Length: 82
Image 1 (spheres, rainbow, N blue to C red):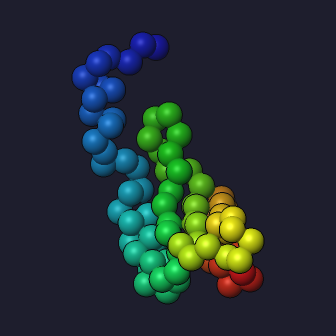
Image 2: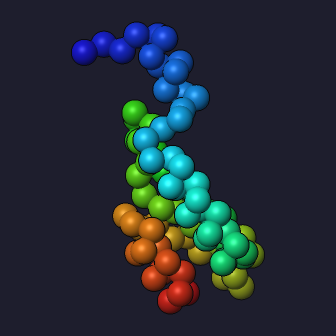
């Protein structure tokens, strides 16, 4: 099924499904782990996908630490272990 130009434009501006809950949880992550940057990856139809994080401060190795998880809880577990 071909998407119309109007639908494509509309999908660029959201709101996207479950955005409210994601934004709330992203805010919690930012407050709890201030040394990290957080976001949700998106697929082609702008649906939220993986939870992503990158450490803002670069470790001695010179490579930033990056984490991805399928769920919020899995990302929190990874953050606690890092």
